Figure 1 (cartoon, rainbow, N blue to C red):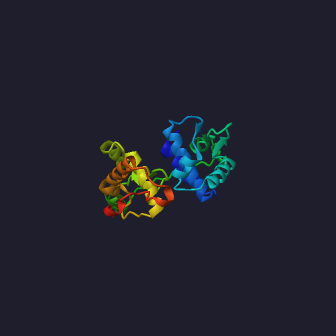
Figure 2: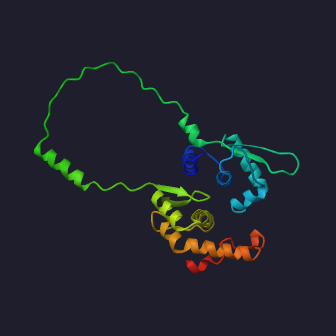
Figure 3: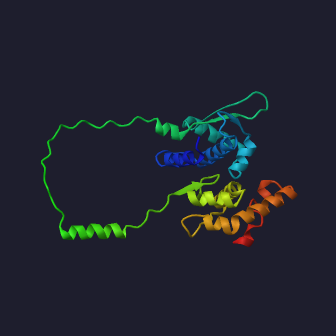
Length: 231
């Protein structure tokens, strides 16, 4: 699977289909986990890990969400004996879209065209040259990345971040949760400057604190550490 193509296909699918908010978060968490597992056909993940990845959604809500995703044909899952974690299999939306048959055009009766020779006037030539010179360059497409697909970056910006920061993907995933939890809004078209100015540093400091001190339960802890000093 292609992680970015699957994320884009999922949000395209949401434009014409309904899905609960918990089901959207659960699908994103499962897709990210499958990516970390190098796209195994079936993979295991516990409800506690999914709860953490979805920002604290309860175990019972995740159980309802995964049943909803299974009913919609977005995933397949099955229980395992004993206390083993459930097995999940992601259904590719990209392959489903590519497999749709092309619509055959309706045959039209042949019509013999009449040859008409026309020559552009001087005014038309001038307009054509002016439009060609003034056409603005096309902007690069903006991708939606991160664990919840809410971090905006162009492909060039993403590649440069990965080249400059070895932990860029982890910092982007962390920032994605922060955006969803705090409602952070960027003034620019993408989050590139914010990630370079403070997100990577804040993520590393928060990770260092988490490694040194065992954090309290989620409902009593601040997921984003000492981030306020950067805002």
